[in-house]
Length: 230
Length: 230
DNA sequence: CAAAAATATTAAGAAAATCTTAAGATTTTT
DNA sequence: AAAAATCTTAAGATTTTCTTAATATTTTTG
Image (tube, rainbow over all chains, first blue to last red):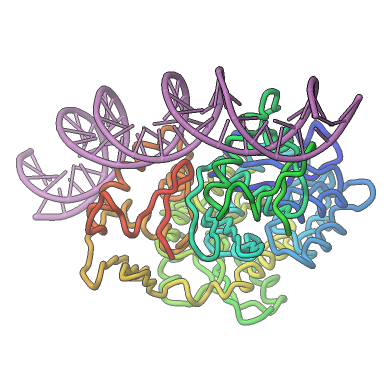
């Protein structure tokens, strides 16, 4: 099971990290948030396929957050809760959650439930909505097909190249430093990453730009990083 | 929430009836069966929208029954069980159940979970188009006949080969990693699955492609996985 | 304007992913 | 119980991708 992005929202760092370990062990990508407000932000910045949401959180609780998410997106939500009160579960499910797991829980059960939901969503063709094709001035990105096109012509990118483009396009207009790019694409701290990233940028430009020397899409912001214009 | 048929399968009459009362109270239609074998019969005779399935049953247990149902239908299955052992839950979910509720349970929670599943299914018109013939550039798949054709000529695929093609065709355009293919087709975690899948891909290409070396349908996306173009 | 810093370019070797073939194991059918 | 069909494993070939290093260019700064 690969290339699904799971957003884990919990105010306790240990829980977030523990869950992350199990998810990563299944080959799933993990993005974390500390509370509901941050979760909504991350949801806008990334392609998220499933949310694990703690109920008890400062600022905005899980139920409120579920309601807000449901206003926009229809992706699966699994609520985590210390309350094992039946009425809480029922309320959570009524409000639009897809599953409800009470703490303490067996991480393996949580994983099994995550996978069950992902399977469902995929077979229901549900990700077509949340994996929308992005089109920026003729440059398009289709997350489900992992395909990028320029004026309709498909561009053959390598996995790393694709990930870089995906990062820049799903956050179009925002500048990413070389280190930030390295960390988010490679998922590891980037020490001497400058050149590595530069080479990949070059390759990408060769593929998506008419004139790689005068890039129209993938622009450098001197001293700061790279971006793709909105 | 009306006009949906729920199949309740449990060997204890009292439980069947108790569940039925709550379901009917929600305006849902209830059909009952005493065991897995009878359940499969009822499934063939009726339009069923969701199954509530007890694990412990004579003749054929809930897990076996789930597997049999999944061979044919993709409707939501909620397993009921006296066992609260985590491993049982995990197993049930792995095998294709959508939810797992342990006895004793609050009937209202069960209802909430039923409604949660139905909501998901309904939003996508799942109960209609899932048996339609898919035609992608001359490659067709008939899910009900389990048949694949290329330009009208039937192709004889083995069960595993068929499942792979079905996965790729029902999600045409989407890229599946080798692991994802393994997990979805074999229903078990894929550790050293690369080669196994590769060999099957080869066999499939031999059967559906004119020139297996230059596949027209079953394409590789390097470093990511395989797909069949929309 | 010259020096420094940041980014760009190229090519080559290393690493990783996929493909292929064939043999043996398993399952299903006859 | 034998035969046929199917599946898995292994090993090596092939193809593609990644990183590194050396050097060049552009932009900024003093």
